[in-house]
Image (cartoon, rainbow, N blue to C red):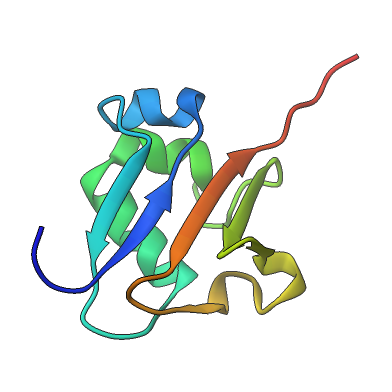
Amino acid sequence: MTGPTVSVVLPPVLAALAGDRKLLQLPVQSTVTVADLLDILGGENPVLNRRIRDETGAVRRYVNLFVDGEDVRALNGVSTEIRPGQELFIIQSVAGG
């Protein structure tokens, strides 16, 4: 892929919903928000989108998002800005007992 991109890293369970790709390169021309990036990702991968966001578009509570290793909840949530060359890690919480 040519041009500026943001890397999206997926765990195996979510990668299976994106054609078994654990690393996606999404094209961005400039700084975008995490929400914008999720819109791009969801447009290309609707089944994956439903696992990450609910019917209102909110990130599901068991999904954790990290920009270059920093939890977006400690930043500006999905309004956190992400620039070309950075990475968005999407991780599902593990629950059970």
